[in-house]
Every structure is written in C-alpha cells, then in structure tokens.
Length: 565
Image (cartoon, rainbow, N blue to C red; front, side):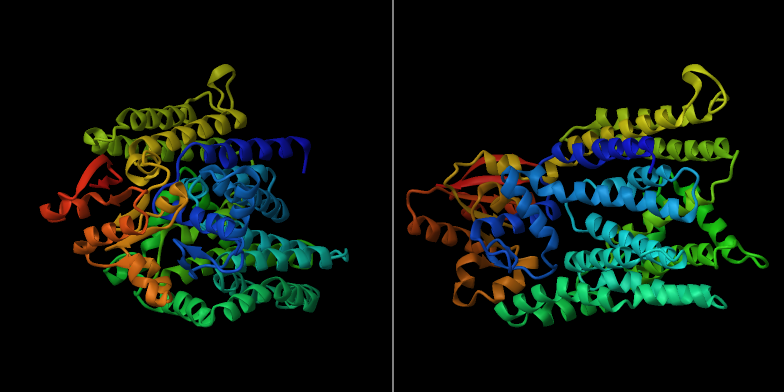
C-alpha cells in the first residue's frame, strides 16, 4: 500500500465511516435494539447471555454486542458509542475492497474501496446500527485472506498467518450472525475447485488453505465455547438459535420477511435492491461482472501464474452469484442481507476497468447520479407535506447529485484544465459531501418518526415506563430502566415465555389492561411517576375511558407520551 493510498483510505474512513455515526439519535427498531442489548450487558454484568428489556434474546450471537458494550464501557452510554462497531466494519470493508482489487490485479485498487463505501447500499447500511455491516465486512475479509493464503502457497511463501487470519475472520462473522457465514463462503470456495482442473499445484494450495487443520481448530476454539456455555446456562438455546432462527427462517415465512407475496417478485427482490443500492456504481458493477465472466470463459494460453488469476476471479465471482442465489431462495429477506456482494462487485469493476475508458465510465456514473437526483426530487415532492419537515434538505440533496451529474458530463472532464476537470480527489470529495447531505436529510425527514430519544429524555428520570402498541426499543436505552410492554410483545415472545410467573408483570397483549398495569406500577412505588409511550395508532384507538386516566405530555411522529393521573 502506497502512502497516498493509505491516506486516501484513512480519509474515506474518517469522512464516511466514522464521523457520520455521531449525527443521529438511535432509530427504531434496529438501532435501539442493538444498542440496548449491550447496555444491559454492562448494567447486569452478564456478558454471556444476551437480554433485551430484561428477557432472554437469542436471535443473534454476541460478538457485536460485546464490541458495543466495550465501547460504551470506555466512552459512556451514548448512541455514537453503541455505533462504534460500524466504524470497525467500515475499516475492515475498506481494507478488504482495496486488498481484493489489488490481489486481482487492479491498477487503482483504492477506487474499489471508495465504490464500496459510496454506493447507496454500502453507505446506508454502514450508518445504521445492525449486524449486517460488520458481518459482511468480516465474511469478505475472510475471502480475501483465503485468496492471499493460496497466493502465498503458490509462490512458496509462508501462508499460515493468512490461513489463520481467514479462519479468525470467519469465526468472528460466525459469532456475529451465525451459520450464514459458513453458508455464504463455504459453497463458493468449494465451487471454485472447478477452476483448478489440470492445475495440481493450485488445487493443492486451495485445499491446504480451506481444510487446514490448524485453521479449523482455531475457528472451533474461538466459536464453540460461547455457544456451549450459553446453552448450558440457558437450556434450549441451541434449538432456538440453530433450528428456529436459521432453518425455520430460511425455509418458511414465519418471520414475515419475504420480499413480496408474489412468488416471482419475491425471488427477484434483490435485483431491485441492487438496482438502486449499487448507484452510482451500477453500470460499473455490471460491466465488471460481465467482463469477469468473459475472462473466465477464455480459451487458450493463460498467464504464467499456475492458473491462480483465473481461480481467484472465479472464486470472487462465485461468492457474488452464490450469495445472491442463497438469499434469493430464502423465505426471509431484508435489504442489508445482500451487502456481502458489494465489495466483490467493486473489486471486479476496478480489475476489469480498461485503460483509456475513464471518460466513458465517468459519463455512465454521471447518468446514474442524474437518476439519483430525479428520484430524490420525487421524494422531495412526496415529503413536501410531511409535518416533520425536511423538504429543503431533500431538494438540496437532489441538487448536489444533479450538479455532480452535470460535472461528470462536461466536455472538459478528465482532459480539460481548471475547475472543469472532475479529478479523482474532486469526485471523492463531491460524492462524500452529497452523502453527508443524505445523512442530514434522512434525519430531518425520517428521523422524527424513527427515534423516541426526545420523548424519553423529556420524562422525569425516575419514571416507570409502559410501552403501548409496540415495544419501543429506545425506552430502556434512554431511560436506563426496563419497561412494561402492552400489546407489542413481538420479538420478545421467546423471552416472555421463559419468565414463568413473572410474565404477566411485564407483558400483556390486551390494550384494555393499560390502566390496571399502570396502577400496579404506582402501587409498587408511589413516589415514581408512571408514563406510557404509545404508537400514535394505538393511542388513537384506545377507548376514551382509558385515555381519560392519562395526561398527554408530548407527542411526535414517533409516538405519544402520557403520564398517569
């Protein structure tokens, strides 16, 4: 890595991977959930068993929870501190994209990192506290380390460090989201053996890396102890996590996360997600994919590298295709699931970029920026009547993308002089500034309806809480206390069912029980006020006789805050 590349990557990381994490409060439901679980680890001292609102929560393993908990231990319980694992994910992503493109032969590998960081899907998922950004970065980094280990063996260099690194990254991915880590990379690597036919040395290097006994031992030692310990402490965990959360979600619609109720549209779900999510690098990604396919189909003499280049491109391409196929046939779909394909697509786009065609590539990107501007203009018109505001931010964002699009189409681009030249650094700076506007516009338009932070902070610090109509994830995070859930158990059902006799104290699915539960809380501790945070719909549909027992304190698009009379 040259000094210029290093500083470019650092600046991309600071500007797009770290600083935006400080801008927003936690959004419901995902961000508040994945911040509250590690907060409860700190509060209870139980770093083994994940809890959410005081009950067992076993949908995901604990690695990212530990990272957020450590961050909040060091920096305090803040939204940005809970989000800091996303900064780690961004760093891993940028390194993996750069290294993969360089290993495959790209002339300017730093652009692969910039593409992965600035496509809509990569940037947006990298700003929202879920597990997908870190998981995807770790999986692809494991692929990169595997390619490096095979290259080292082919060049007769020490390969153990890269091999163990690949298994360590895979273990971290496994501890982040579970079996999906192996399910994505394993079949792709096995399939890549099709590209080693007639290459015994290459085949030996691939098998020695993928089935390295020290690697598998290390991976097992890093992952198995936590799964064994948590199952011993909570009998039934293994069945719930491995069967219910993996096989049942993949094979059934139990989670209600199918892409569409129409079978065909459901299977094409990620085509649409990538069609929007890869902007403004969609055409570059598609062209790189097509050229990679052509490269693999060539006959005749190959480079004198023992077939490594063809195998490495094949393994990268198979990772993209298998990931897309795997999540497309699944009955559980969310947009971030497809994120692992972004880095390989960016790398292939850079690898197969042709010398002298930069102007054409820039013009294609300019068209995509124009499409983004038009989409945002339509969104701005839709939000013009939004009571939360934000119309001006969206128009500013559309204007920024439109200006970049026009700049990319000027005749002087790449060949002229002065301000007309859209140089690489200027493009990076301009697109990064536009994405910062996207963060601000998102908070101005969607933020008021996605965060309960202001509502909870406006309440007395010693309040007792009820969440009505939905489990508002942000209540326990910002109030630092558990809440009663009325008519909104949802994902907490497993934990509720394991509370035994105490379940009725904390959960009730009947909205009519609201006042009785509030009176019970008051009787337990008369000095503390009782507040309810209700979804607007749940509050509206309460009978007047129930609402009459409350004083409405404040409301926002996120909910209605009321205090028991």
